[in-house]
Image 1 (cartoon, one colour):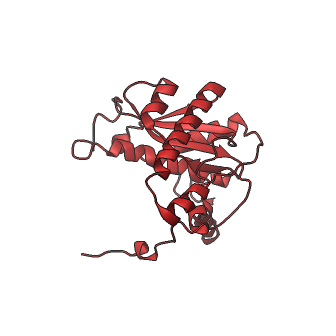
Image 2 (cartoon, one colour):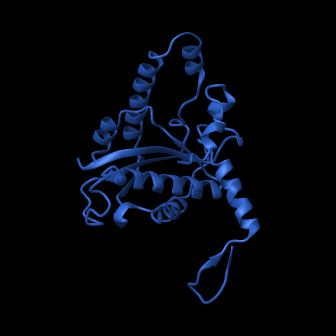
Image 3 (cartoon, helix red, strand yellow):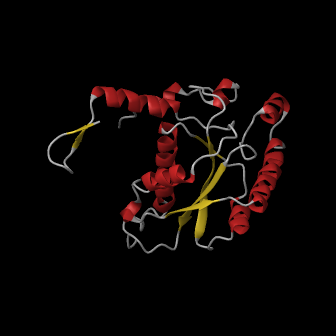
Length: 219
């Protein structure tokens, strides 16, 4: 990146930067296999500061980050996942069930960092701007912060895995967060054990890339 003009002026992103940015988007993978290496706390804090630059409805900035560090809390989260995963398996039959049973769907045991990311529905920031017609925009704002964190982590050599096979109410109870906080994402974070350009679920024949969804629909 090169910056033109006076300090604080508009940045100029050249072709080389844009090509590397496209690589970053392509290599942002949902990671489930982590090395045991510790992640510096300062690095996570830097990444969260970057995530806090995400767009938010009415500039409400409703994201709330919780680092899950105690053994008791992590074991409760893992038990939560195991119960939900077993229930999900029962919803499939035949070959699909067999394939599901062999998928690695979380890195909860291996990941050195666990982050629970919540949306504070009681926030007064933003004074409700943009939420009268689409109140769900608060949640979407937090999703934008999650994705910003994910990309920033990848740029630093870290990987993140989003665990959705989990009971959000139980997570909130385990972490004893305020009632107005809604779980949006539970992330496993660490240095990837392996690197792949293609998504793991695509590589293991669960779901192929849908080219049709790249189309721009015009009306």
